[in-house]
Structures are given as structure tokens and as C-alpha cells.
Image (cartoon, rainbow, N blue to C red; front, top):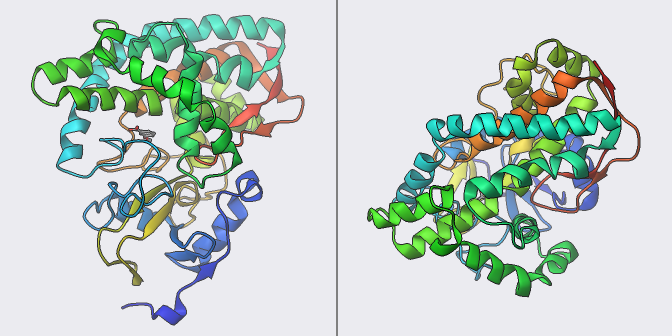
Length: 399
Ligand code: OVM
């Protein structure tokens, strides 16, 4: 069954506008009710708002390619602002080879070796903050903790580490339209890009680190030295700004649901499940694109060749046909299968690092604070590619 072209649902919804980003969930519900694939006229792209088709498309790299770019830019038609990622923005067989290297480095065994250090560092940071009583959950905690553990795990030294954050911001802003925020960040490119390129070299990476292990895979002949550089760049791109955003959004969601915080305080072993539920409820990486290598269809809607397809993960995660009371934040729900990390061959390869970091922070806070109250205005960061806060003043009540 196919939908005649005249019946295609169109919308002037702009997913990247400040208004839509401030409160997208009402419009997501309208889009889900409207159609499985909707033409967004402002950008001439397709949006996919429901869980079922998001899941199907994630499982179909033949009809929905990553080589066309993970963001709005269409790499089949235009030159991207940076050389494409050889894991995120690649299809099999290239992707299969590069992904295997990262998956091995970020394995469960590697996570076990990091866990104690992450927990100890989170406890020390959180203890200092809760003793103060009031602090900013973003600038004092969410933006501090990942910086205190991830660059070390990656294997880079201290010099110029602030560039790491700017680069992540560039990459994720680069997934949206070229707006003032992106241009402001790109004004720093002459300083940041050479710093990143230098950090991707073998000599810059501490022996034994994640980065050095990428070069070991090159020594073993699995990838070339040029590919090793680009895979280290992937870790630099995707490893820091994401977890900062996710931890910040997790604290925001938890602080707004005191009943759920109380459950967590009673049983801090819920920290990991609580984090995943925050990813479902208010996803920090709210979308990703696919691009069609040839004509195809989405639930009967014909999609032409070289079209950008916007997968609205944050909407799929609120789809009532998939989740019972999807708009309810419930850290005890059975929630395996959310798409906050994506799923399938491109599902987040670093998700266990993210969970380890977030769990360490959330559990440390739940061990000390029986209540968290938001005491001032929160603000959303300007980024189009990540949903993140820039500030959230809080007061905690000690146990
Ligand atoms: C990469 C990359 C960059 C940003 C995000 C990402 C979500 C990957 O360069 O490979 O995964």
C-alpha cells in the first residue's frame, strides 16, 4: 500500500528553532499522530516521529545510509565541513571494520577496569558540592565530572583540554543547520582543529589508553594509520559533550521528579536504570539523520533518492504505542529498547562508558542528598545537535 504524493503530510515544523527545542514534546505528539513520515518543508527533509519506523530504519542500512552524513548536511550532494567520521558516517563494510575496533576497546572488561576510579572520583566531587548545600548542577557537576575522567581514559594530557569541549560542541552544532551558534564556534576553528589533529596522533596518546589501543589495532593491520587517527577523532568528538549533556539532563529530570528521587535514595542500585529512563524521557541526543542512497519507502510513503531522513529519537522514546504512559517518568519501568543511544549497527559504541559515568554521579548524589531542589532559572544550551542545559542552580538536603 502506498501513500499518493498528494496525500503526503507536510509541516513547517523547524526542529532546530529555539522555540521547538525549548519544548518539543507537544509537536512530537502531533507529528506521531499525523503520519509515519512527514515532509518538513523548511529544510526539504523527511521526519520520522514514531518508534516503529525509527526502529525499522535503524535496522536497514541498505535503504538508509549513514554515508550521507549523520546531520542535516547531505554528503551525497555537498562537501561536509570536516572529513566524515569513518564509523558514524560510514556503512558496511568500512563501518564493520572500524566499529569492531572501538567495540573491543570499549568492552565490558575495559569498563570494569575503570569503574572503581569513576566511582571514587564522583564521590569526591559530589561530597564537596553537597557540603556547600547549593551549587550549579551543570557547571559544577555535569560539566566537571566527565572532564575529570574521560580525557584521562582516552589518553590525552592536560594541555588545552578546554578545546575538547569546543570541538564536541562544533561537531554537534554541525549536525543542524548552519546558524549563528555554529558560526561562532567555527570562529574558534583555527585554534581548535589543529589541537584536535595533534591529539589524534599516536605520540599524543598515553600508552595503554583508549587512544593508544586504536593505534595497536593499526599495528595489527586491522585499520590503517590514517584510519586510526580518524577513530581517535571519533572518540574526541563523541565522548565528552554527549556525557556532559546526558548527565545534566539526567539531573534535571530527576530534580523535577522528587518522588522518583526518593525511590533512588532508598535504593541507589536504581541509579543505572534511572539514568536510562532519563535518556528515554528527555533524550540528550534527540535526533540523528539517515540518507537514502536510492528511492525507497517508509511505511508506504515514497522517499526519493538522496533524501535526508530525520529520525526523531526523542519522539520515538515518547511513543504511546511502544511505552505505557510514555509521558510519565518512572525509574522502575521495564525500559529496555529505548532509542536514546540509537540501536542496531550504529547504536552508541560508547554507551557503557556513558552509563558508568552517569551511574557514578547519580549514585554518589543519591548516597548523600535526600532532596534536590531547583532554586533558580535553568537555561538550555544553544546547541542544535544536543539537548543540554547550561545552568541549573540547586539546593540539596543532606540525608
Ligand atoms: C564521530 C562522531 C561524532 C559525533 C557523534 C558520534 C554519536 C560520532 O566522529 O565518529 O556518535
